[in-house]
Picture 1 (cartoon, rainbow, N blue to C red):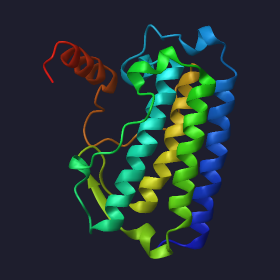
Picture 2: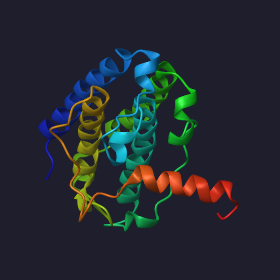
Picture 3: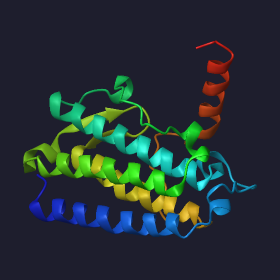
Length: 189
């Protein structure tokens, strides 16, 4: 069973990694926030602004997954849909770092409220994702600070010490998003 100490550690690490992420983002000039690394692949090809939008989207997604785990025993998260954020990845480069950070701040306030409302038993509930397998609510919530750490490193032009534990090969989310936008613009869905 999850302990109060584990939850306190979770909240502390979430705050610590978010402070580091915000510092990394604020240190970027407007030109640096739009820089695309030439030799990178997948998410690492995203600009810092796109990475911030991705973090915003995924925070909303992780929250939806946690809520699904609280509603049902070990739900399949493959079909869980969450409300889009006001600035999706595809539109991020037309915005500022400050706008993206404000969105992340508001989203994190919701997440903290969600965490604060959970009793210890809720942290042991599980949910299964096609990409990550079966995780407890505590494990899903740990993804928040690990994800912040990963993208803060990318914004600083370095490889993160954290890489997500995908089942199989990591999907190229950047390519998938570009293809989805192209289909949408072509009227194909």
